[in-house]
Image (tube, rainbow, N blue to C red):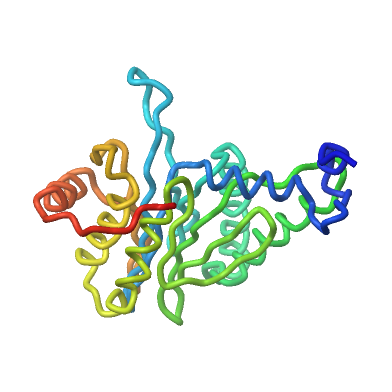
Length: 247
């Protein structure tokens, strides 16, 4: 039987044991612009490359604050990601009003996963077509989590998602052991180098790059444009490090 017989909804399994709509949602993440996350002992950061549909249009935001202690960058269908951001902001606000404390980061991830799992089980719905890199900080230190449309999640030292993300992964895999002892400015520079490795053909500027930062005893914030310009200028002045390109 043809593949199209099995990809009409999320309640139909193919003979190969796959749910094709979930596979399509995972592919949407791979087609989105790149997002990168990495952490040290004191900080966790996310970096997002923003796209513009036209030279006369603005850039689409990819990095969002969820609460004082947690933020997110996304790749894939940004409209789906915004829906999740709205839901998580409401959960964080309700938890803070009820318990007068921040929403635990690990439990916040479970909220995303439970919502994503429900989207893969009903015939009348479709999976979220977005992957999230969520950074947060609690009494155990900084955290970096990846959530996927198939309702899986993992905690990482560093990771990248989106189009052309393999060269960035290669850079992160090569250097992640030094991230733990990095100062914030060095951690940001490693993230920008990973981004440049994947998007060497695109000129990185403070307009098309967003950096979100959270740290121990520091609230989540967006890197200021002036500081981001200086970091990108420093990046351009350094000698590029060769990274194997994606096959």
